Image 1: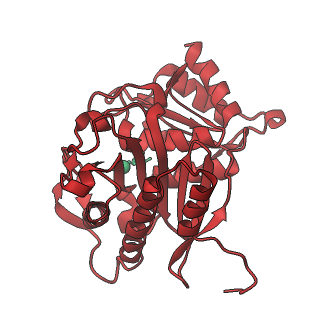
Image 2: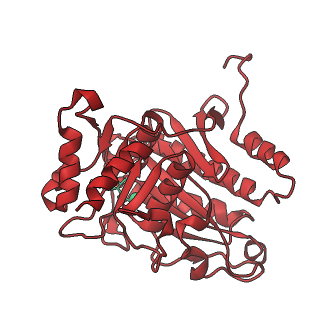
Amino acid sequence: MNPQRKIMTLGEFTIQELRNFPAATGELSGLLRDIGLAAKRVNVEVSQAGLVDILGDAGRINVQGEDVKKLDIFSNQQFISVLQGGINCAGVGSEENEDILVFDDPLSNQSKYVLLMDPLDGSGNIDVNVSIGTIFSVHRRVTPRGTPCTKDDFLQPGNCVVAAGYIIYGSSTILVYATRRGVNGFTLDPSIGEFCLSHPNLKCPPDGNIFSVNLGNMEKYDEPVKEYVRYCMHRDPGSGRPYTHRYIGSMVADIHRNLIKGGIFIYPGTSDRPSGKLRLLYECNPMAFIVEVAGGKALTAAGQRVLDVQPTAIHQRTPMYIGSRHMMEKLEDFLTNA
Ligand code: AHM
Ligand code: MG
């Protein structure tokens, strides 16, 4: 490591933020540091996956009837154990657990936050060495401190999110998180085992030339979505089209790339799954919050922000359209004029 390089770790960054806001109690900072610790543990396992025989099916399916890989379970357990062992979180809602987990001990009951997460998103890519990630969002409890948290604390719309973020375990491991004050990215420096500020004050370019969608589902999309996809692929050098098509199949990686380079990611409803595939509370809301804070947009239908959907169930799904502001506005024209 270059000794001249000025680095700031995630821990230092959260403490600096605290200094700027004397009214803050430090609980959110503590929670973010807990998340960083769990992410480092998961990163070790992901990077050694082939070696320690943790790859492959765990031989069961999750609460939503999908294959669960061993790393999904490992990641879920790591995050839960760190958060439960800490004092900054009253409970967790996870893709891997049918019901919320209420920590219910005197210290956890005093916590003002609950956390929703997809512990390992992009699980279809685990076996093939492609980037996968963790997604999370933090809500302030609506139930009184000192009592166990309840489902009401989790069933809040995205516009109540206090902080949200993701970790990508990829060519390098990066943790990006947003509060209302901004989005910052931290890359794991393996030489010191710390997440270091690498992408300060991330902004999503208003324009871009990347579109990300599962084209294999094309026949199952509604006509306005098909029209929009054809628009993206149509040659029009003046406007930079055709756009480049990029689809990793790990939403975190797809949206991270578009957030940095400018682009749009869509997972619409299909004829067989009108609500699409992605889960509102722990996949769509966190990404929507991050992208909106960075200046982009996230919709579930024309004129309907993802963040304004009132959830009714922990695992509910929603169509999502998310990305660079101007590209989203163009997409909305198609969806509105249907
Ligand atoms: P998962 O939580 O089971 O991994 O599913 C979510 C993932 C997203 O990361 C990705 O965008 C999407 O599923 C890909 O789905 P598809 O293969 O239908 O395009
Ligand atoms: Mg997922």
